[in-house]
Image (cartoon, rainbow, N blue to C red; front, side):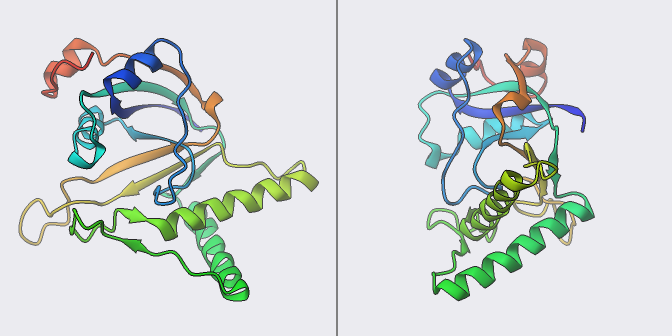
Length: 203
């Protein structure tokens, strides 16, 4: 898989730590859209900054760092094979919850954001983590079964650009990095790029 540029929204303190060589801490929230890992916005520094400035983030000084990511073995949900893998995992996860009597997680809107985008994606997160666990277990007995190092997906999100439009204002490609070594490096947003897309001083 190719090498891509992607952007991580965060607070200024975290940005400075990452630029100084500190590793990125993976997210383990139960509502992460693509399961456990470190999250990036592919080719979209402005969208990463918009995310960082959302009130619920509570970042005193929102910032962004760029990253060079080698996708490696990637679960790409913009391909039919990637979609099929998640469908199989969903079926298996639902069968397991029914067998054990466990409550099924749901994708919901947070009370502060009734947009209809269901941004708290607990079901999606549980299905993705279930898929990763299956592959990790399989890899213990089968060396040919390799876990995914990254996940990549397109998310239509936000309001329509205009009446009856097929384009949504927050549509983006999200990357979840599961293996830290796939992050080849981080960098400051160049001044020309910051000015071009209208970002404030980030560092």
